[in-house]
Length: 315
Ligand SMILES: *[C@@H]1O[C@H](CO)[C@@H](O)[C@H](O)[C@H]1NC(C)=O
Ligand SMILES: *[C@@H]1O[C@H](CO)[C@@H](O)[C@H](O)[C@H]1NC(C)=O
Ligand SMILES: *[C@@H]1O[C@H](CO)[C@@H](O)[C@H](O)[C@H]1NC(C)=O
Ligand SMILES: *[C@@H]1O[C@H](CO)[C@@H](O)[C@H](O)[C@H]1NC(C)=O
Ligand SMILES: *[C@@H]1O[C@H](CO)[C@@H](O)[C@H](O)[C@H]1NC(C)=O
Ligand SMILES: *[C@@H]1O[C@H](CO)[C@@H](O)[C@H](O)[C@H]1NC(C)=O
Ligand SMILES: *[C@@H]1O[C@H](CO)[C@@H](O)[C@H](O)[C@H]1NC(C)=O
Image 1 (cartoon, rainbow, N blue to C red):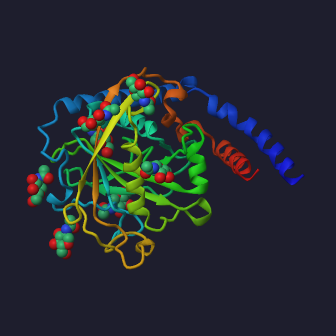
Image 2 (image 1 turned 135 degrees about the vertical axis):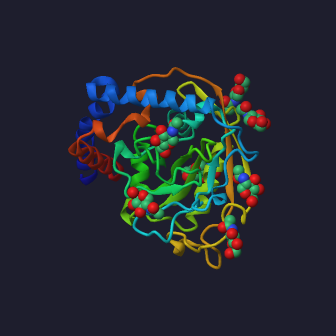
Image 3 (image 1 turned 90 degrees about the vertical axis):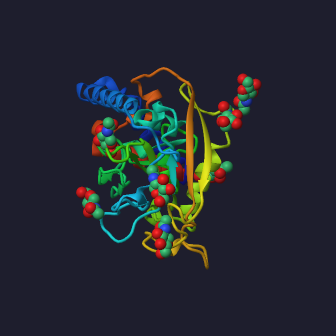
């Protein structure tokens, strides 16, 4: 009886969710403006890649070579600790992947997406990648999309499930400052707990998050694919002691270490992403799931749809 009630409630609330999900990005003037702005930023980013100086052999500039650079993120409420930046998309990757639009498409192809219905991502984190830009905020030009979550294979609602149940997620920053313009993308990957447990990092969550990401991206025989865009991702490992030491010093949540181990092992995965096939660029939600943007959602619609989803999970 109780589960029938929940099922019906779920169904009726889900009806409220549908129009929200189906609403195309370009349906209002504001959204159209947003897309155009995004697309001109993408063009500017691609143009800047064409005048990029020759890359270092590694495909990125080592942030530690600059006096202020660091391979730890900056957590605003705790200036003395951060999260390890434990994966890098090499600047040798296809240029299309090195700007936010293509990067987000690649992320979708490996089952990561923007947080649940454009929901807030908690406190943003920052990074100084030693490229002369200084302290930069996570994500796209306007600081959006800075947290990407595992979508359980469902690009529309999957990251909502992740938000409730926890799993893999990463924050990202592009190294494009004038003193180190590689356009490499630096990722801080970790496994997080469920919402009920406050999204804390899971046991051994930094190493496991990075290793699951690498395990996934290297598992596609024919490349990963989203909406006709197909990518091959290869990995090279930077051993501990080069970019990060195997230590818990200055790491956020050192208590999630395995017994007798440092909380992160100091290894960094360098991924090179090659675009194999190109799909259609489109402004519809279906091929641009990341464009679900907080500006397009009212707070109440987010609350209603989050509740609906919670009920669906329970039912
Ligand atoms: C470099 O990245 C910042 C955001 O981190 C962005 O505001 C800026 O437009 C980027 N530069 C180019 C040329 O894309
Ligand atoms: C950074 O420093 C390392 C070690 O000192 C050096 O090998 C490397 O070439 C430097 N340059 C870059 C671009 O990372
Ligand atoms: C980085 O910028 C953020 C946002 O302005 C700020 O909260 C934080 O304190 C800054 N951190 C450093 C080390 O400058
Ligand atoms: C892929 O990622 C998922 C979600 O984090 C994880 O459960 C799975 O073990 C990963 N697969 C590999 C081969 O690492
Ligand atoms: C990979 O591509 C080949 C050639 O197009 C095809 O025969 C094969 O079934 C594909 N494998 C997978 C896992 O999609
Ligand atoms: C991906 O690149 C690697 C290394 O070049 C190659 O061995 C592999 O066959 C490529 N896979 C695809 C699907 O292109
Ligand atoms: C590792 O620790 C040693 C000793 O404290 C230090 O000299 C070195 O700079 C550290 N390396 C990294 C990559 O943090």
